[in-house]
Length: 76
Figure 1 (cartoon, one colour):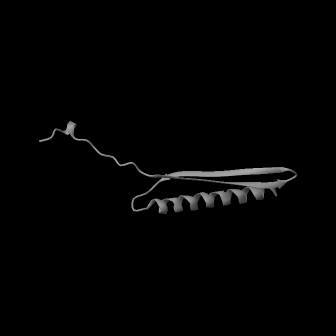
Figure 2 (cartoon, rainbow, N blue to C red; figure 1 turned 180 degrees about the vertical axis):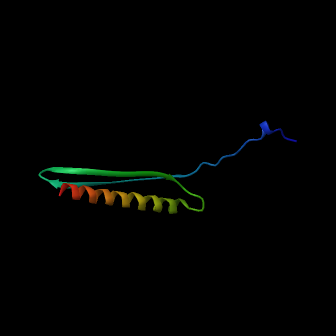
Figure 3 (cartoon, rainbow, N blue to C red; figure 1 turned 90 degrees about the horizontal axis):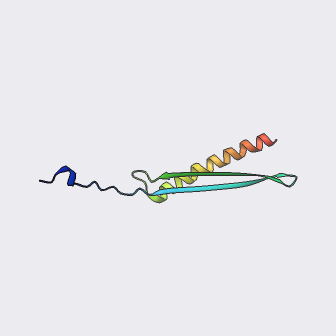
């Protein structure tokens, strides 16, 4: 019989996926606005690394486009 303090729990490392996207908007008159968005997430159960990468990229792209649209509206 193995004592409970002698058993070791094995934990697998979870793969992380990180995407960072940026966009520089020329606002005219030699000025610009830089927007960056980044997300770090883990590969979820049932996902491949590629699936997770595609999911995270799509989210970051969607957020960056939305924030860029907000900035353009505020700038007029």
